[in-house]
Length: 425
Ligand SMILES: Cc1ncc(COP(=O)(O)O)c(C=O)c1O
Image (cartoon, rainbow, N blue to C red; front, side):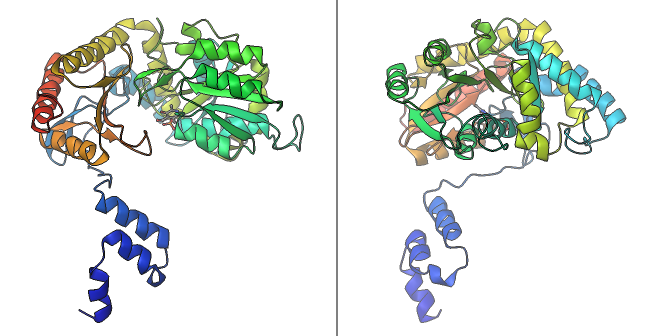
């Protein structure tokens, strides 16, 4: 061992990485990695051998119960969906051939636009290969269009965004050049105070229909009346409400009868609909405009035919089988009730497919999740910065396809580990 390496070994990995960084090319990378490893916060990427969307899966050679997949209705592997996707695959191949703007406007994608708009009760919809792209498209397209300052002056717009909004919304706001004003989570008086004291034009408000890390709903009705009062553009990210909320899975906005008050409904195909991709739905004129201005739509490839074929069938089943939602909510209510009775702190409200069990400390949450995996249960922890510091939690995601035996195995493991870790007595 050289004198220099002996000296280095006297310090913790994080201090070492900060003190001796002149040796390294990527300072921030080594500091971050050292910090994550020291705190035991490094995510573990387990290798899944079978469908990760099924209640039972194979992880590193072991049969494991899956409580992390957003495939809420179990549609990802439904035989009819696979058949529809296979049919589209045979016709269209695996890719769309490019941006729809240039060469990818296949009839199946036009059908997907129509059935999506129809599901959520809006006039038209534009689709993207990821929900992430929808959220990074919308703010810039509406508030900083590429055709110079028309119709608004660059940087003049203000976006009022719930502080707990998803990272993709945060990213979309950041690249829009608009001024982002965060309001306290679901706090209507904070939003009202901030929007009333501003003379910015235009104004836009964005919130979520269902906040899954909190396990509860956004205040869509109240926000719609504030938006109306201030003539603000209103967008609801309903990634976790589509397929889950409402009689036919129409999502939060149509379920609350607010289609004429909400300008943009954002949704994702990769949660309850079991596919992948995302959309923005709204008035015909707005969607027509987005088709020429939304940069991820113009500059990136379209949704593939195979995904479109599968999702169209998934939407059909979602509308026709309300019993899938009933089963999902029975499952989430059962877990919520039993965990509450066992003495755990459970966040949120019923009728949300995700049940969040509060642990608090970041390291304890990571360890709890690891102990569950040893007992063949896959259930990740959510910790800072995804949720506030000291409010780490297990995010238990239920599906309509979980059986009572799956749920009871989960409960038994949670209660055993909870007692062992003194979270409950
Ligand atoms: C609330 C919310 N919005 C948007 C997205 C992004 O959607 P996608 O996964 O389709 O990119 C997610 C993904 O988890 C989400 O939870």
